[in-house]
View: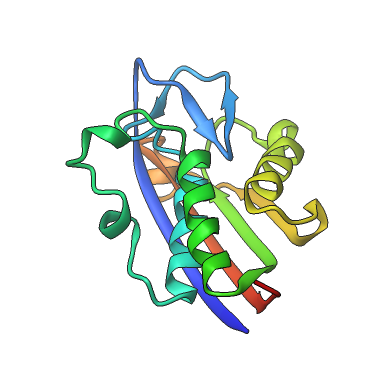
Length: 159
């Protein structure tokens, strides 16, 4: 077994879609970044890469590479899944939290779970997605950005 933790932050800006867990959420702002800036999926990928001791997102998907411009983070997650499977691991369970003051995310959580489970090729029962506010405190509370955290347990599987 291996355990990894991931954390990611992106700034909220106008004229970008808000994509979390592969779900496009109606909102006046979106997350700024080279890819689709899906802060949840980025935290998940960093957790898995950390558990495998393979570095971070920037090492595998540098923002200087035009191939990753506006790419779906779920596509990148599938590549990370390939690295994980190559080493003989699968997700035992994944626990995540999105930190955002607005918009309300509860209506989208189940679709996020399903997207992550499909991309990681595991049952949805192994995936937890939660959302919380910061009660108006900090950059998330001020609506300047969003953050996400992820903790993953990888277990050995047949290769």
